[in-house]
Amino acid sequence: MKKRERNIVDIDKKIEAIAEFSSSYTSIHSGLYDDFYEYNDLGIPLAIAVNANLATLNDEGVKIIEDTFIELIKVMDLDPRIDYLDYDDMLEKSTEKDQE
Image 1 (cartoon, rainbow, N blue to C red):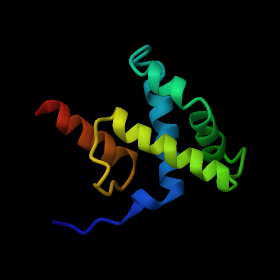
Image 2: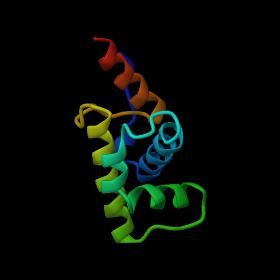
Image 3: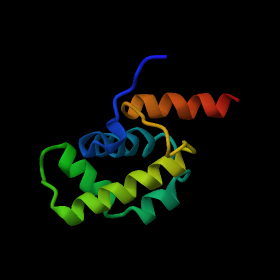
């Protein structure tokens, strides 16, 4: 088994995952994640802006991103104890879980 980096604690990877999830699922699964988008009405646009280098994070912004990432883990039905390398890894694990 290959050793994984602990990117789950990397704020940049969390920002990227939130932004990628948002862009890939907005049009495809319209309505499916409405609760996630409504609850994270600050974290999602913040992640998108930071990911596009349009904003920088202060301490409160980091907290918002952390909270939004936790919610993303929940909505993707993933184990929060696992260290995911990036969004693609998260998506792969979520897909594997759906196929079980």
